[in-house]
Structure formats: structure tokens, C-alpha cells
Image: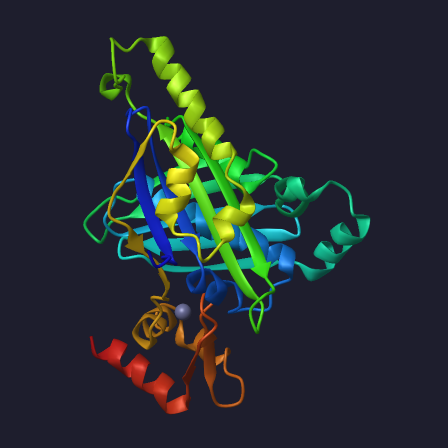
Length: 315
Ligand SMILES: [Zn+2]
């Protein structure tokens, strides 16, 4: 088996007590985290949110774009990640370098306290946009938890009413010629009792609860190294973790870093402002708009600005 990368692997326990997803991200994560010069603490948080968005994209049924935005009053004031049904991912973070340095100097709280330490108090919002003629769905919860995985868990419990367990890890791997960011995650969610099966005999509520608890314990036994290991096939890892109850895997889907920005979209944004305001954005003769996600510059010279506003006036 060749190991798969940038992949979402859905699975289900043979006893139907739980279903879940395994996510591993290589290039798709590395490219997002290196599009800007993020301090490693910020890159870590953004990468974790990317893994969480990937897990959520396999959990919630949708056709379109799923985005997760976190806003806080800490040194990292915003994290934004989105993923489409086709697996296109992008994301970016906003942070205050001075505040971040101060928090790092103070050195309070261990590495497991990333959320209170770097994001502070705020909210976790998940939006699903399924296109022009639909109502976007949004669920918002308070930022609750020491880690982003805990925040995701509390979102699933409060907003999606799902009993779930989530494990997420992101790390910069040093063994390659250049360091590479990698991320992995795994979640299980409790299935309905009605589908639960025992090999022999009538299944009781207590059997079901036992089976669910075992699934959570097996998930907890998964190490960070296993989640990050590029050469370990997702099937092998799942069979290793859940072999006691048996596990069935379904077709995987893949992820890639792909931004949806375009010159057309930037033009539409520019013409939504009064012309004087756009003129005042000029540096030299040009207006340069940089995509916050992928860091690509869109440059419009004086003639270009003239043209787009003439097109609007002609409408
Ligand atoms: Zn872009």
C-alpha cells in the first residue's frame, strides 16, 4: 500500500457504535502555513484549524464552502480557514507581533494552553455557504477549551449535538531537506443505538455505551507520531487502533491548497468603493491588492482603474 497524503479517510466501527474520520495533511498544509511569515506558534494554531476544518468537512453534509473563523482578544486575533466540497483549502491568521512576543517572554502556561494563551477570549464560528440561492448556515460558540481540538469538541457538542472525540496535531518536521509542516487529526462520533450490533446476543444500552467508550479510548491511544507519519497508510493506522472491534474504511477524498481569488473578484471589490477612495489607495501609479489567503498581488495601473470604473458607469 502506498501511503496517501492530503487525505480524508472515513471509517466506521464494525459494531456500528461509532463512525469517524482520519485526516492527514502534507503540502496542502505546508503551503498555507508558509504563504505568510508566521511565527511557529501562529502557524501551529492555523494548521490545527486547517486539520479541524478538514475533519468537519467530512462530518457535515454540504455542497459548497465550509469555513471556520476564530476571533479572540489575544495576540492572535483571527484565524480563518475554508475548505470546499472539492477539497480546496486555504487559510490565514492575523496576529500582533508585540503582544505575541510579550506572551512568549512571560512563558506562562504550558504548550497545552494554546487557546487561552494566544487567542484569549472569543468565539468559534462555522459557516457553510452552499451557493447564491441558499441561506448560509452558521453556528457560533464561545471559545471554550485549552486547545483548538477541545474548542472543536465543544462546538460539535453544543452546535451540532454530536457526541464526539477529536485529536489534532501539527508539527514542523525537520528530516526533509527543508523543514515541512505536517498535520493530522482523527475523530470519532457516536452513532445511533438503533444501528448497534453485537456478534452474538441482544445488544443493550450498556453494551452500546461500553463500545462507545472503547472507541474513545482507542482514539486516545493514537500517538502524535502516528498521525504525522507520512509513510504510514491511513488504513494501517485505523486497523492498528480499532482492531479489537473491527473497522471498515470507505472511499477517501483529497485536499489541496487552492485559493479562489481572481482578478475578476478583486475588480468587483474595488468598484464597490467610491472611485476617490480607490484612487487614494494608489502607491505610485498603481493600486495593489494582496490576497490575504495566498499572498498574490493584483496590480491595477491608472489605465486599469479607469477601465474598471468606465465599465461600471456603462452599466
Ligand atoms: Zn488568493
